[in-house]
Image (cartoon, rainbow, N blue to C red; front, side, top):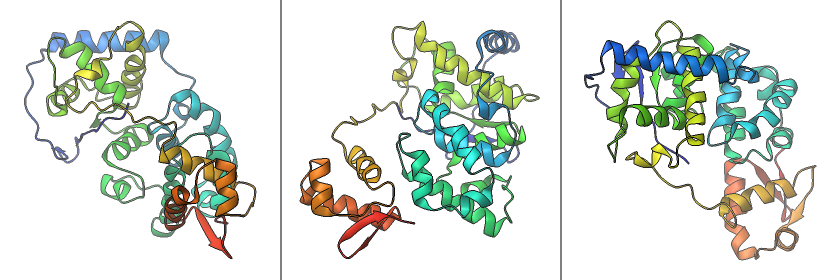
Length: 297
């Protein structure tokens, strides 16, 4: 499921697009809630996730981009391989699109791979290869919105950002909105703020995410369905997203094909594939020469 998010920065005391409201959560409620989350994390937290064993901002960036709309299990298969091949901003910035996609194929949402490379190029040129720390600088990078910027600041720099993503939203709806529906994130944000473990934001958000991932195991229905922002993910089979991925996978390995061959191998008509090929070309994934398509070197 894909959900919108809102972010509050303690440094600027401002929620992006959302005004802060006071909350009636008592000190005892806050303490009990924090204790429950910490207890779960201590016993069942995913402490061995590789991106939790580093505070390298670039490595955190890679993990956060990979984790966008993708299950942890799938990211685990790719993250270490990616970091091993591209351990630094410079190595990624200088890599070819084709080589990057060799690792990325299988994660889905391939635009993220291109955004990651372009982001690395921008960091190398504008920030001399050093990951920026300020929110406005992070959000200026390709593929980084308010949530990802907040997550990088929390996980890489241990800053007390306030943000929401799918699992965090699930935790707060489950605990604080049991008898309510159509819940707006604007109602959740003040509680996230009130319950933040300010001295340990990095671990606190890990704990919240782990607890949120656990909630569906003991709840018959997903608490996030009560969110005002709840949207069912569109079907993947037969979608344009699937065709884009199939085309890129087909062209891996310096292979060049005209549209007629691509059409036969993917079992879709040239009429259907032509606008998708144009789109991939415009985005910088593939190039066309002498009526043959190939992944950009």
